[in-house]
Structures are given as structure tokens and as C-alpha cells.
Length: 178
Image (cartoon, rainbow, N blue to C red):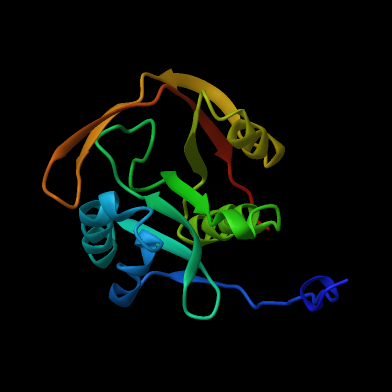
């Protein structure tokens, strides 16, 4: 036995849930893993300051280890109408923190905030090639009500337009008081 395989420790880390600040934007890139979304993060933050979106974070030691974004208004009324229905997207948790309920807690926090804001329906998309996401959403009470071809685009950190094709299920849930 060597000194390197003798012991084990268990860590308890506090995780808080809060809205993003401007200082979080570079951290949302997760050390370069999501640098290609840099412009999208900035645009979403501007939309948050205008009251059109929220960037809800799971924070551990002043670092965002998870996120879900909330679109309050959309041109697609079946997703978000600005009054009674909102759209959740970009749910992610850092790999090393998955399986600890952080994603579930992010969704619950978003739903609680929406309920307090008089929203009564929430929608979310689950990529058809991600059955784990669909299982999670169904476990939390979401049901498929539509399909979407999942064609969208964004401009990456170098200013190059990127096309995405990600067919998905559109799921919804009626919110209730907690």
C-alpha cells in the first residue's frame, strides 16, 4: 500500500441558488468548455437586466456549477407568453457534480420563482438523443405536448455563425403552489 491509496475524505460543499451577475459570465464558460456560447451568455444577461429572462445558477464557492435559463417572453407563445407560460432551457450541471440533485433543485427553484411571478405553465425541451433528460423531466411532472425540429443558430466567440440541428420533445408542466 502506498501513501496515495490509503485514505478517503468526504466533502460537504454548500450550494446556493441565485441569479447570475455580470461577474459570472466568464465563469459560465467552464474553463473554455462553453466558450463558444460567450456571446449568447452576454445577450442572455442583457435580457435578464431587462426582465425578459433569468439566468438561475447553482453556486458553489462563488463558481456556477449548474445553470438553467428562463425565457419569460417569446415570439413563440406556446413556449413563453410573458404572463402565464415560461420556457426553461440550457439546463446543465458540471459532470463532477451530477447525480446529487442539483439539476432537480435548479428546476424546482425556477418553478418556485415562476409561481411567485404568477406564471402557471412551464415548458422545456428534451433532445431526442438525450433520454435521461426526458426521464428527469417526466419524473418532475413534465409531459410531452409537441415535437420540434430543433434547428437554431448562434454566433460563437470568434464571430462565426453556428447552425444546430437537435430534434427535441417539447414538454410542459402546470405549476402549483409548493
